[in-house]
Amino acid sequence: MDHGLPDDNTVKAALALAVRAPSVHNSQPWRWRIGRRSVHLYLDPARALPATDPDQRDMIVSCGAALHHLRVACAALGWSAVVHRLPNPADPNHLASVELLRHRPTPAEVELSAVISRRRTDRRHYSSWPIPAGYLGLAAERAAALGAIVRQASDRSRDHLVAAARAAAVQHAMDPEYRFELANWSGRHSAADGVPARNTPSPRPDDELPARTFVAPQLSDSAHEPDCAELLVIGTSADDRISRLRAGEALSAVLLTATNVGLATCVLTEPLELAQLRRDVRVGVLDDSAYPQAIVRIGWVPTSAEPLPPTPRRSIEDVLDPFESCTGR
Image (cartoon, rainbow, N blue to C red):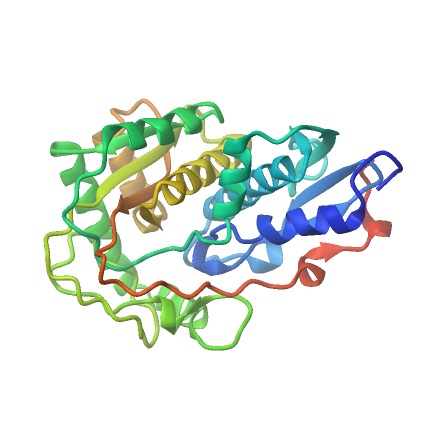
């Protein structure tokens, strides 16, 4: 970058945290470019999942989460991020241009940045401990600041959400292209992407929400107490590309807020990948007033649970385009 702005090593340190963001099937559908005065985020169409995510909504939400991770990391390193979303109308895959200005980190920003490396997608059962309302309220407040709502599914709305999740599992089980795609992206042991076997437990017949059927699950899940996880639905007032990007940013804020107070989280999108079921969630959970973009299962893990290993990530070199190809500033 130009003189007076962070050096490339600082930017790469922030990007190393940005790519810790969750993504559908851990596909990591992003590319980054470092310009003279800004950092650019692009959607990588080569990592599309046509059977799982036919309209690329999950991909854009995933990139939004990485964008927010980048903002948090930069703030902790002393740089405030000014984000220009969809800056190039001629290139819809150019999702964001990020300008960096000098900034004094706040304790909250340092805390959120520190938990990026600790956050995990925890697919195991949670405990029966209730979640203080203040924790959920803080997560919702931070999501709202990024242009999304967070609705806690309870009573009848939870029933609607569970019904949609079960229907999605049935439909996907009958779809050979979906099953093939899921098998290609799971059960991995040494790859830099995909869902590793060591991070996935075997589905149990009494699960309230059916889990995706990943290949060769190896994660132990011995919890026997009632699972009192809450279900949060993240929604946006519109359903265009920029709304989906903002939903991903809000999702990141919810996940990091939860991790910072010790809560476990698992992002769920399967019921939203089928158009009619997504419509059912919009009507039954969000009162037909917002578009559902992601579901978060949140709760406390049992004290006896083993720490989860990190899921792999591609190296910065693999996701960073050379400067010469960057058309931004």
